[in-house]
Image (cartoon, rainbow, N blue to C red; front, side):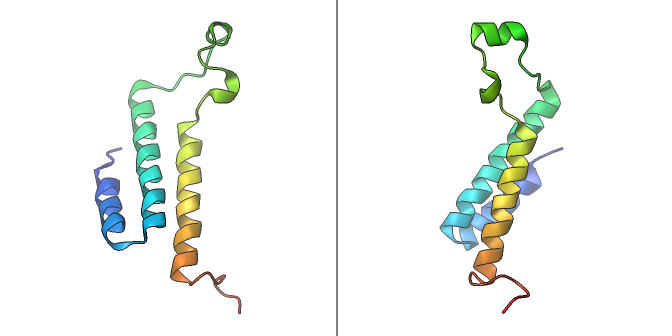
Length: 92
């Protein structure tokens, strides 16, 4: 999955959008790149021996897909709040 279309969309948000939303888009771009790299090279959970050696501890192991999902959710919430002037859509 190439990330070029996302990079192009991120550039538009960085030019046009508010700074706080552009920062979230940067996190999406980084997370998507991590997912892409994991898809190419594999993302292997730590083994028992990795944990004994301290590389990495189980709670420090990153989940690239979850990171991308969290970044997209943060973007959606921030963009919705910006576009609706902080109001919840559909409620008055």
